[in-house]
Image (cartoon, rainbow, N blue to C red; front, side, top):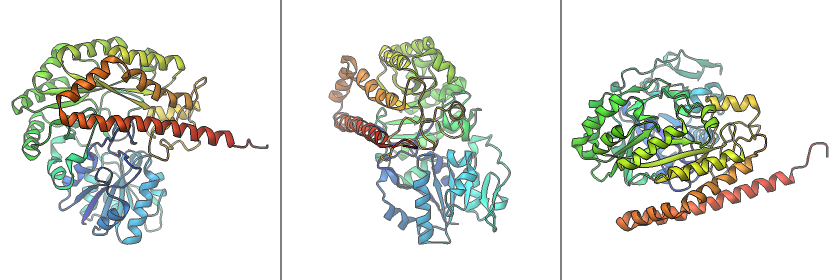
Length: 490
């Protein structure tokens, strides 16, 4: 079947490609590559990948494109499911014979619920869905495809046997040609990466047990399954030729440094290519390792610090202590590697005091840039189950994770700390961190060194403060609604 891999239009600026913590709008324009769709698209001849949000493709154009395809595979998420169902239904109205499949973490964890969300959905891919998509596209009967859930002729939901996880990751084709054919790489922005950038996976899964992290608990698993160093190096050499304008390549593996011997081997093979690369890392590497990566072209680490409170780190099974984080960050500074740190507010069991501890800890680390998220209890994660069992959810609908404008909302609250206090702390955290002399001087320095960065930082600054203002408006609206609710029995 002629197949379209689709990331549909959604909230304005919605980043459906965001990985471990959430899919949502960000404080500044941010779009990750739709690698989870590009990978199966590379397996299906004559297919197309249509990533609507970064390309500003509206629903009208999306439907016009989809009309030319027999088979549409939509990458969905917990926040975007309702919207994605509406898109699927519109596709069916335009062309009733179109076969529509849904894939993604939400569909993998809740296949029955996803199928029930809309009659327009013909099948759902569970777990690792690359070859599931390929086999459906080949026209195989749905009942014969492993790792797939579907409705039979009587409308009953059926679940086929699980598909085995891919063990030899070198079997998967490169995503480079799909990127070149179907995407405009200049449309993809991440605030802390050089522009234009390209991101890709060199492996799947993560041995860490972080309770909030989405992909290892839903699709990738806790075993780090990897491509061979030579396979990675060959694709990087190919991408460098294919995209000469790219200034940075990012390895989006949940923890690229989880297998250090392999990471070191890749770094050695990348060194002769003379390209800048960055990756996700845990805060547990020593100076010598970091320096060797730096000498091989590493520019930046993306590091999840999460909290400045030791007990919260234990509660979420982070597996790294505050002192280890301090030593790692000092070593990165000494080696000249940039660090972008991420923090999460609202993890169990947050208090007003632990929030302040985290803000102070972030200031102490003083990484180049940082991001603050709200705890997102996605279905399929241990955090979700903890919240359900302890009654921490704010709303009856436990899948309601973003506001109507696509920004995150506080989905959890705790005794002595309500959702509004957690939500307000995001703004305070950002201001306390960035409105200090050191971060301001760092930003000014980068702007003076590069005209393009100067223009970009001005845009991002405008978007950043605009988003903080929008958060305040969301909070005020939420409080207004709450104050007008009439108690039962009144």
